Length: 397
Image 1 (tube, helix red, strand yellow):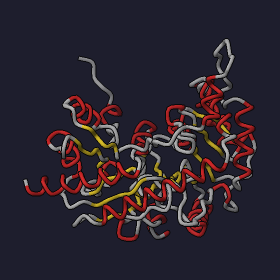
Image 2: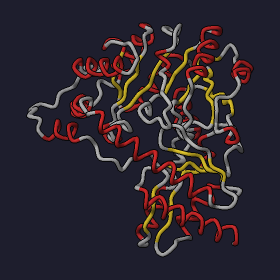
Image 3: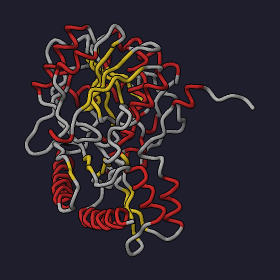
Image 4: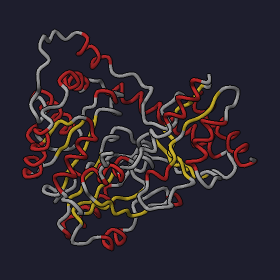
């Protein structure tokens, strides 16, 4: 039999999606599953984006430019300038989702065996992107005890070697909801300049900040013109996960020229999706105001309900729409699978994402889960009620 590649064997399963077969089996048995495992918002996509597709009269669905259509990139640049990031269309490459932008970034800055430092827990697919790119993830651990704040700068510097090429952050964070302050970003900037590293900032949740906090882009930090790379996406901002449109932004001309070669190799991002995303940029501010208000209410309700469960510890997010909860179990992989295979409360159960997959340090996060508060408030309350009963039965057995 032909042999599968070592890289194929090393590719990690998604902690977000690997339990899907168990959820599908539960549904076939008539069980209703509350999905707290994945960041798929239930917020409606802006009508202006859907109408741009519905009313389009295009007759030939042609390739776009490899860097994305000029019309879309010009409007994107105007959006970023409005939000304090001074860039132009030539500094943007449109990608097939933020995922492809991350792959382009890793391929641009790192060779086989090079290292990228990432505060953990982090978006689980960073492990997959790194494996596919032949890059080694070097984790610096943040802790639920201090709400997953940026680890001390000394911790970063202690990990820098001659193989280190970049520091990768997610701001606001997935899976923690942590929002970096300007002072923290400036500390990271100082390290990047001192050691001649890139900072790759995944900023796909930039709109989702709470309690009066402000998001600061790494591109707005002084002195980082040649060091900063931003990854962005429309998936969460406009509730357009299925559009699969993201972008990579950098003021470093060599970075853009190199990333463009990766973009040319896959030809172009999807044309219809770019049309929808260009139209979405005309979404009025009222849309975001209402969405943020809704997420704040959901966050507050979720934290309140989880805090009522004995033995549960939860970090309070300042952005995005996720939180990490520490549960009174030894192995949340086993617990999450058990909830789907062997448990229901009046015909209902809950699907969560075991958090160990959001770490690269073995053994960390095994008693934690990531919860996405992307369901309406009454469903969140019901889901936490089910989770509480599941914990009682699981630990009793």
